[in-house]
Image (cartoon, rainbow, N blue to C red; front, side):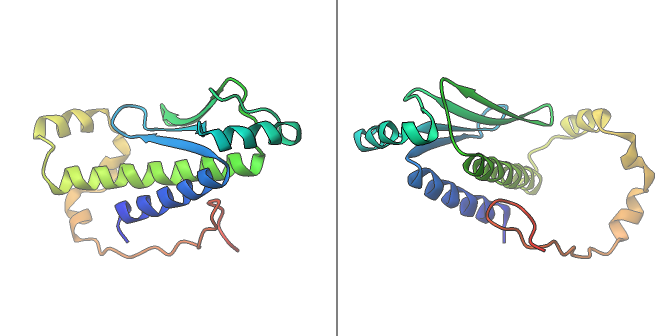
Length: 163
């Protein structure tokens, strides 16, 4: 299954969770950092549901946002206004963001490489900032290495590995 197919599957899961919880989302991948922005739905029925739920679960402001983004390699989660949701829902959203982010980055990288869009100047500059650990194995040894698939445990919907 390609990275883009996996990304689309995670996106569909996110849509379902947002619909169930009367939330809307935007996954921004056209600027740094790639982010997932979650907001309460602005339609009238969703606002009435939020008002009726507010006593049980806390208040979610109509202008509240929940933002997931990787900055400098670290997951950053921020909220604005009052955005009260359960830990279970927060973890589902966080894991979906992580999976969507990873699939999108892998898809983007593959597309750039396969289309030959990196110039040698860019590659040289990127390589200069890379760790020296890549220099441990000569390129000819890597070229002759056999690709062996690695088996990973299945994951549940929340990204946790099943035992």
